[in-house]
Image 1 (tube, rainbow, N blue to C red):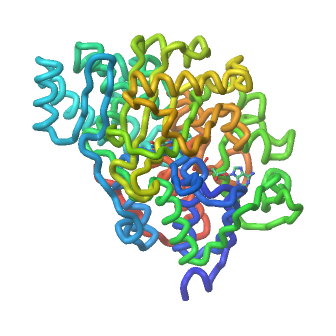
Image 2: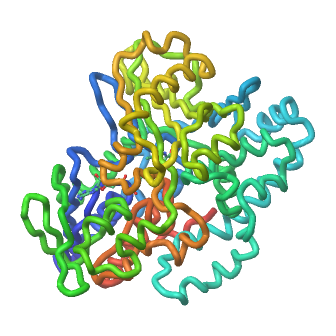
Length: 507
Ligand SMILES: Cc1cc2nc3c(=O)[nH]c(=O)nc-3n(C[C@H](O)[C@H](O)[C@H](O)COP(=O)(O)OP(=O)(O)OC[C@H]3O[C@@H](n4cnc5c(N)ncnc54)[C@H](O)[C@@H]3O)c2cc1C
C-alpha cells in the first residue's frame, strides 16, 4: 500500500513561488494530497514570467547559483532536472563595468588568473587564498543552513559549533574580502554579491563571502526560456503527482482553532480545510494580513515592522527591436559606489548616480523575443518603502534618468528609439504585489535575523503551520528558498510518519 492509499493527509500551500512549489512537488511525490493556492494567474511569484506581445521577461531571479541544490530537490521528487530544463552555464559569468575598465569573472581559473594579472597585477595569490578559505567556510556553513532550528538544541548543534570559527563574527563581507585583495575595485568585484541579499557589502555579515565563492566555485546558470521555466517545471511535476494547483485563488486569511491552523479562507469566501498549512506568501505580508488580528506575539505586525528589511528594486523590462552587443549579465558600477550604497541603505534617498544591472539574455537565448529583437531586464537597487520617497512623483523621472544612463554609461546608443514594449516597477508596485515594504529580498540577513533567529520553517507561533520562502530560514535566493521548501516538506513527512529519501549534500 503506498502512502496515498494509507493516509491522504491534506496539505494546503499558500503561494506558488519557488518555496511553495518545492514543498508541493516533494509532498506530492510522497503521496500527500496537496492543494496549492496561488493568487496570480500563473505560478512562480517573483520567479514568474512576464509575457508581453512576444517578449518574455523573468520578473526577478536571473542568476541560478548552486544548481546542484535544484538537481537534488528534483531527484528527491523522483525526477531529473535535465528532463525538464535546458541549462546553460554562463562563461564568463558576467561583466563588471567600471567607468574606465571592465572585468569579466569566470570559473575557468587559468583565464581568471590571466585577467587578474592584466588588470590587477599581484593579486593571484589572494585569489587562491579566497578560493581555498571560502570553500572551507562553505563546507562548514552549508550543513547549518539545511537544519530546521526547531529547538535551541538544534541551534547549538555540533555542525554550528564547528562552523563558529568560520563565521567571521564582527566582520563584514568587505572586511573579509579585504583580507584577500587590496585594490578597492577588485574588492568590489567580490563583494557586490551582498546585493543579492539586498544588503550593503559594508554591513553584510562576513560569512556571506561564501556568495562570491559559490559563483567562482560552481558557476552561474541560465535556463533556456528564462529562469521562470524552473517554476513551470516544478508545477508540471506537481501536476504529474496530482497536486491541485489553483490559480487566481487569493487566500484571505488562515482559519484557526485556538492557535492551530485548520485551513484557509479564500477571498471568494470558500473555506478549505487541511491537516497542515504551508505559507509561501511573503513573510512580512503574511504576518500582517493572513493571520487573524491579535493572535501573533513574536511576529505581531508592529514587531515584524520593527525588523530590518532588504532594499527594494526599481525595474525596467524592455522589449527592443534590436539586440545590443552586451553580455548576458552586466553590472554597471556608479562612479562613487560607496555613496550609492549609503544612499540606498543608510540615507534612504535616491542617488543621482546609480549602479544598475542589465540582463541581455537574448544574446544567449532566442526564446525570449522575436528574431532580431531582445528582451532586456534592468534592475536598480533602491531604498525600500520605509524610506520617505514618493514614487508616484519620482517614477517617471527615475525611469528617464535610467534610460539616459543606459544610453551613455551602458553603451546602448539610441535605446529609446528601439523600445517596443516597456514595463516599469517601483517599490510601490512590489508592495502592491503582497511584498511587505516592497523589500524584494525579504528580511535582511543580519546575524540576529538568521538561522535560529529567522522565522522558522515549522512556525513557532501557530500549530500545523509551516513557513517557506525567502523571508524564512535559510534565506532569500533560489537555492536557500528550495532548502526552505525541502525542510518544511521533510518536517511534515516526519510528523506524519512518511518515509522519504534524504540527500546528504556534499559540497
Ligand atoms: C528583482 C529580483 C531579482 C532577484 N534575483 C535573484 C537571482 O538572480 N537569483 C536568486 O537566486 N534569487 C533572486 N531573487 C530572490 C528570490 O529568488 C526570488 O524573489 C524568489 O522568487 C522568492 O521566492 P519565494 O518562494 O520566497 O516567494 P515568491 O516568489 O514571492 O512567491 C510567493 C507567492 O505567494 C503568492 N501569494 C502572495 N499572497 C498570496 C495570497 N494571499 N494568496 C495566494 N497566494 C499569494 C504570490 O503571488 C507568489 O506567487 C530575486 C528577487 C527579485 C525580486
